[in-house]
Length: 101
Image (cartoon, rainbow, N blue to C red):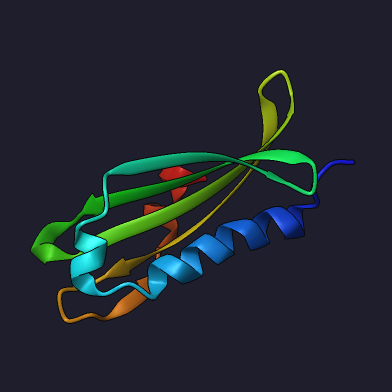
């Protein structure tokens, strides 16, 4: 049985919650991209974390959870945040989010 969209989103949010708990220095030290293939409820997911350094020392972090269906066709869920040097966090704008969706 295929993983529900809600469960797929929850997997991405679990990773995002962990990343959101990191300090500024820990976020700054993240690699540009990490990809991990996992199995959730018998379904394959690829969870990717994207990290970009923005102007003025801010860091953008996006998490994608891609669920495979058939022959590379699947469903993508993505969310993220921007962390300022003052340790202020905000959700991604639609423009910032678009490349990851």
